[in-house]
Amino acid sequence: MILVPVGEFRMGFNQNEFSSDKKYFEHIVYLDNYLIDKYEVTVANYLECIANNKCRPLKSPWPILSDDEYIKTLSKSDPITLINWNDANKYCSWMEKRLPTEAEWEKAARGTKFPKNPWGNEPAKQGDASVGLGGPKRVGNFPNDKSPYGIFDMGGNVSEWVSDWYSKTYYQKSPRNNPKGPAHAKLKTIRGGHWRQAIGSDVQKTNYLSIIRSGYSPDWISGTLGFRCAK
Image 1 (cartoon, rainbow, N blue to C red):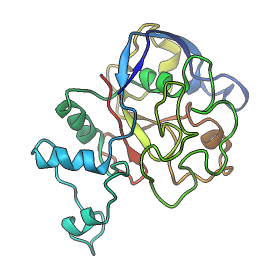
Image 2: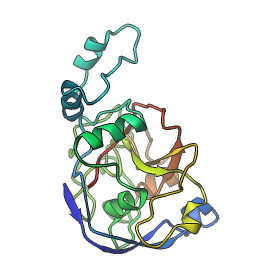
Image 3: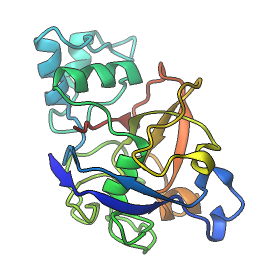
């Protein structure tokens, strides 16, 4: 895990394409010290949780493959995917950790100098991150996709669950100190880019990978979605 030190940072973005979008309302956030995983949780990590009877067994998404056959197709060093919010939360609890808050995730990805991407303000290009590719890649395999704190794959590879319920207007009423999201909502928040996004096809999604936020049902699963833990 990597220590993200106590202090303030600017969260959200109110310029250019985001100037009229309330869900990116720029505001100052103060966070206490916290630790966050250097890498996304891998297939190997998650299989260990299953072996200890603490996580739900993986199910094949393909009718032609049994569960065991599906597991054999997975690379142990790739990020685990097809995991819903509750299963991600359960894994982090087993590790005596938790999912990061949305504010913790964004500070870990951007640092305090306000970059649009983990590597700075330059738009994503092929090779900077696991974006515009045919599937997830081994965690930590893209040296440019490393945040100011040395945390990998926050721009690409897989998008990540965080702990917060999702509200498009939460940034406008967020408390300054250690915000944890709305008390309740229908959707959970997802952060970061993923391997399926095509570079250049959506300027917001590929030029602002550390900023993009969205909400999905906590039961949702996807091959482009994983997670990491905090403490």
